[in-house]
Image (cartoon, rainbow, N blue to C red; front, side, top):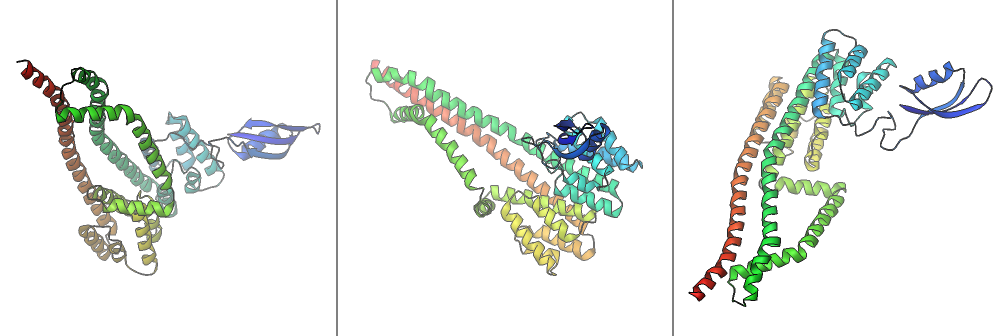
Length: 403
């Protein structure tokens, strides 16, 4: 970290400048070693850096990196290695400078007397509220290593799910871009040169050819302007969604959409149940677990409903009736949560409900992509066929006239 200092040397002269140090205390010690009287020391303010830690907010730490360091830390602590030594060992093993800096700073805060959860909480771009809450529960219960193992499993499963969805969407996205590109090239570069020959002959053109000419002219004249207008509209829409109330209404509308709404609701309820299960297994209090589980959702409308359910639990209502009042969970999930609450096996039933919902989501994604890919091929083939027929019809008419 970089610090700016203001000090007096042994001759009483004022000294100002900067130096590199691991912490504020370390910076003061370095100045005192020179025999200087420290007047002021503060972390250097640099654009794009965290004002608390001096670390770049975009540290480039991925979910895979987070899962690996969590697994390594859990393994070392299970071997009865002290926390600060385990952090040092993990920091030395990582190859990413950003993550190495984070772990070094966390270790320094541990040596200064802070808890691990407090030290991790200073780096929210890397360690979110769920991560810190589970670490807090592990420290309080004295079972930090098992909690870290469970947390590593959760991070790995979340990354695997993200990779699976990304891989499933790559082929349809590439196919869509290629289809649009092929049709655009045909309409802007190939069709005009072919149609010019028919126009010079002053021949009456079929309806399909006239439609093709109109589409080609429209794309050449207004295509770029329409694309810019569409991008501007998307930017304006995203800007309008920064307002909380408008974004909540938009997210509520998404949940009412026929296919997308069902997929969005499925992934959010599965994430909520999985997070709540992990926090409950880590001895996090139920209200705190519900608050954190709601905060990890991407849909604001669902988050507000689940926060309202948390308030009903705070007032003395049971978990399953509160979740039932949100109208977000399927009857099977509600029944499983109710059974777990009554039998005292809430953690297990929440995990089963989350896995069941995740399996349903995977099936829905597979089915949707299975229908989308052939549909896209049909649309692309139909477009190319229409272009070919629109070009061939005048040629056939001309041959008939000559014959």
